[in-house]
Amino acid sequence: MTQTITELLNQVREFRSSNQTKTDDIRTASKALREAGDKVALSWSGSFAGYHSELYFRNFQRPSGLRESFDPEWGGIHGVPDGWKARTEDEVKGRIEELAHASLKGIEDSTDSLLAGAKNLQREILIQLASVEATMTDADKNLLKKIEGLKWTSKKGGYIQANMPKTFMSRDSRAMAQGIRLPAHLYYDAVAYDCAEQCADIEEFLSDAERLLRQLDARSTTQVPSDGRQSALALVRTICARFHTVTTQLRHRHNDRATLTVTDEYDVQDLLYALLRLHFDDVRPEEWTPSYAGGASRMDFLLKEEKIVVEAKMTRTGLTDKQIADQLIIDAARYKAHADCKKLVCFVYDPESRVRNPRGVESDLEKLSSAELAVIAIIAP
View 1: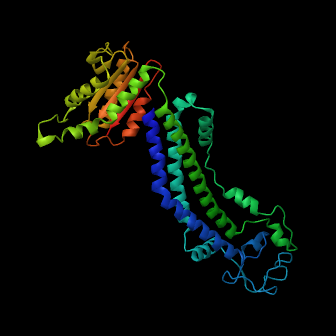
View 2: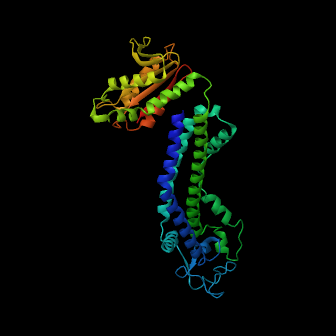
View 3: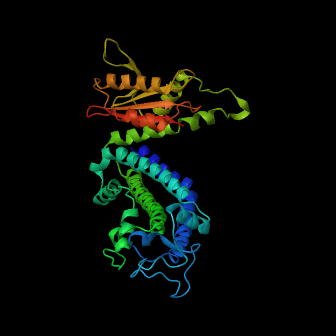
């Protein structure tokens, strides 16, 4: 699980880093659009009653003095005053965008894209941490609950409701009969406000997620194992994670002397066997498993005292992600029946990055874990 937490932490940091410019651009555009909306609002009738709400002065100019101002009380009883004209939503939007030098649709699309990524990251965190929630501290659980409770709801409705009058009176019966209406500039102000608020929610989510994952990562790193098996598993993880570093170093010998070149699965097994022997006294290669579905298979290495099996594979041309996953799924089913196997480490050496979605394959394989057998998948480098 330590590796999973580290990977999630890296995903959070990568998401923040790769989207920082987009977030800043949304906030800058939102501020400009709202300031432009405030300028357009100065040319508005000031009335929410029916057709009054659509009236703007001249070319969205601020009225000069009382003689040019619109009187919401009398409205259009004596005719609409000179200079006042009903404007469509698109006309209001166009003027706001012209003043702001920004696009409302542009920041909406950018915000939707950010939200989609944040929701996917939220979902992945909740899925991966579900199995360790029981071991978390109360502070960890509170953070996890906060992350889980994020609904990513739009703030437009609340903003509009807060800025709309509950009642409105005018002597203009035609306008009053049409009811209270939302002026276009207020709607677009709500759109810009919502985009900025969604960015703030995403930032808060990333901060909470990073804090939680850093706490879990620090605790798993510094925690003293309660028994030898846990520390043994950590050693196996380290060997697999650093396997590629070892193979790379072996290729660089003094005076270009002969060395072990890892070119196939047998080479992987030979080197892995040597590395395991550095830390474990009883390493049993090619231990037969009980019959499963009419056949039998040999596991690569059994650490008998620690009850850990390490199954090693190497990617190659023609061996797809699905084929690797299918092979390991069958192996996991076989090892559940082995008395000396309580943890199965599925190590896939992938030096040429043939596995297109390594983290996804690891996640799918680890979901095979049960009360009888814990499955740990490591695709490296």
